[in-house]
Length: 136
Image (cartoon, rainbow, N blue to C red; front, top):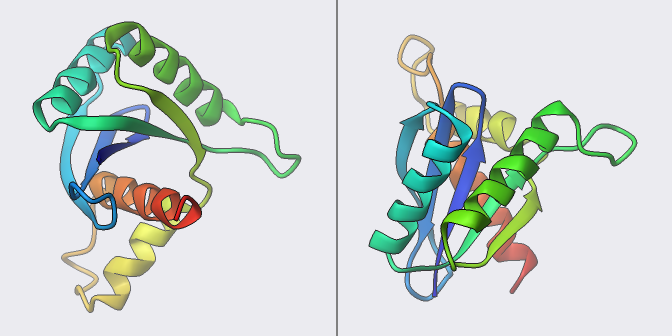
């Protein structure tokens, strides 16, 4: 079963997709944020086009284990997504996915000049990899 992972941000939404066996994660695309409902519809369409059997939305938490502001936004997005598709939607702890993505780019040897910018799709890959590892 293919799994679509979502790194939901205020400006961009990173997407990653697993292979059909649910073992490998690859970046898919980055969407520019428009509105929660339109974004949810676009993600639902992409999930259907790619025959995803599950959508995993990354959610971040504060040091007390409660969803922080971004985590609450992700939960609202996941709810909007559930209204747009019959594909199951799960929230998954995405703590440090963006930092992990930046570290991965550094470890890949990408020059400082070229690694500027955003790593939303790679952050989605980190969420998906963590989800796959946690559910083996």
